[in-house]
Length: 91
Image 1 (cartoon, rainbow, N blue to C red):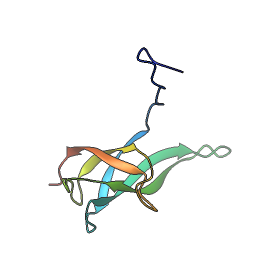
Image 2: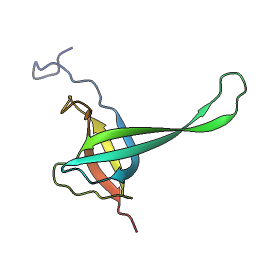
Image 3: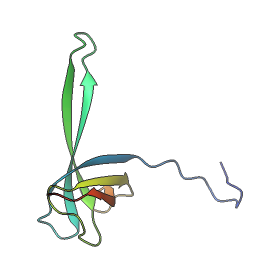
């Protein structure tokens, strides 16, 4: 697929909203994403947690902040996400 400028279209990037668990590394944040899922047979609703390593270029977020992360190219062994914005600061 090409857009009007004859450039290949980039697929829409995934975004998640989560809580920063750790800000101890330089320019890296550990973000916890919590989602709900329904069991296929028992139909009980339960929570699932996932931790992502996200790149924060300006060290703007801190532990407890709610941030939005966006998928990106691999930046290191574990980092495949970037912090796009800080939604709300921790109290």
